Image 1 (cartoon, rainbow, N blue to C red):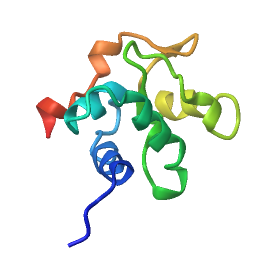
Image 2: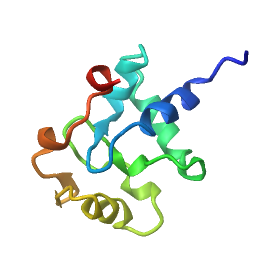
Image 3: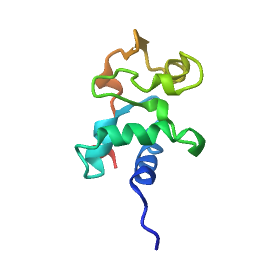
Image 4: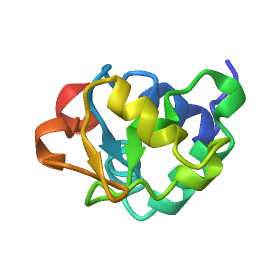
Length: 107
């Protein structure tokens, strides 16, 4: 059986994030046993657009839309989140903990 690479494991976790919820790069890294690899999770998200991964649901540890410049159009990430009922103000999720989904607890 072929071993999955880190990016594929990240995509598997990201695909589990429920509609209307968000998680952080660090939470995914920690869940995968690579707690210091949040930046690698970010790189995986940057490369995920063709893989049907809801990358817009992955933000930094305080809810800032740090990956928004990787989406076509300046406000696409915010619009996708708001379409799911997640309020965003000044590139940050309002009441972040309310919408936070922790893969370590949920999977």
